[in-house]
Length: 223
Image (tube, rainbow, N blue to C red):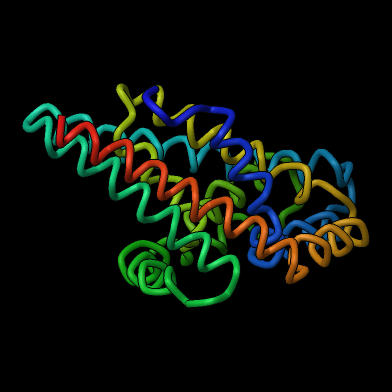
């Protein structure tokens, strides 16, 4: 899988879960309160597995595009690696909050995808069963998110569509711990991850990893 590993995707989801708590934490908590006859933990699991399914499908679709384009031109395949490195750097700056570097792509996602999908919310409300929780999670998996889009750039240069799905599956699993915690613990985790020092460290990790990817891909083009 070149320089991209499933473990790296998992870690990306794990250390980026503070952003997930802000985006989806309220939804996950409200689901647990809405479930009257089902176990809250299982409702949360169903929701998150629905979200994971959407991420995996998105990973397959983007990987399919990447594989098709890469077959046409080897240099273009290296360009896709450079693109993913650039997105890692932008994500790092975004997490440190030095710049709103990913808001533009979130706006594009909102216009092209989310404003059409959000209308299907009514089919899963109220979320009073496991199938509805799964469907609700699958729907909200398409919520415009710079973190998710950054992870998707990795799948652009996956060797197969299965690898693209696996990358996004591991990314989703990395976000599970924070979103499966109780509301109070989730807030504590969110406060920790969103602390300035923590954001600075994590943001720098993404920036330097992005630079590493760009250097590796550039060397391949030169050679």
